[in-house]
Length: 195
Ligand code: GRF
Image 1: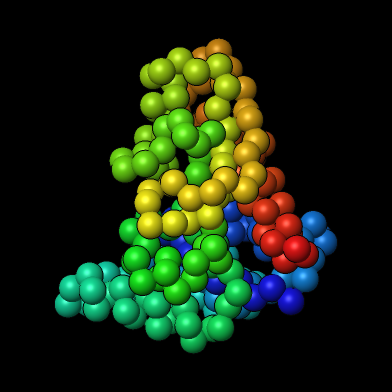
Image 2: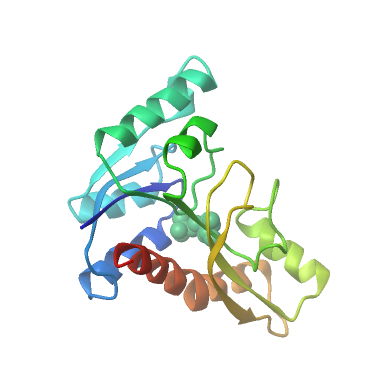
């Protein structure tokens, strides 16, 4: 049984896709042990609570400095003894000591076809604004292992999505979520759970 911690910061639609996939058998041999957010108001925490999953806030605001926060985040994750950490819209920089301790056991979903539109400053809507600005005809999403860089780890899965006439960043974001993110993140977890 793959034990998973999911780290979130926002609405949690990717978390919901994972929970739904476990419920409907798209993901097997997997249990979400805890959902952790840096943001106490993240609706993703509500989604976890609604499923009876431990939902915990570990916020940098509650700690004297970033180093102490990093230690608290690592300690909280360690408490659950997980095999895999899934970053599902987690907007806090991952502490190096976490990357080292959980080497090749942290995965992230990014809303573009890496290496396009990724790295520092590319998150959330900004990714889709940049894709529309550049005029790409195809974008999509990527699941990759997390290493010490930003969106630089080995790629696990990608899925392409067409940009359509008249797309706004919001419309494109939704299509990339529906057609790519919510498909390949559960698929990647299932692959890892059954390797
Ligand atoms: C998604 O767009 C994901 O690609 C990015 O952050 C967003 C999280 O959305 N990493 P949600 O919280 O899963 O709805």
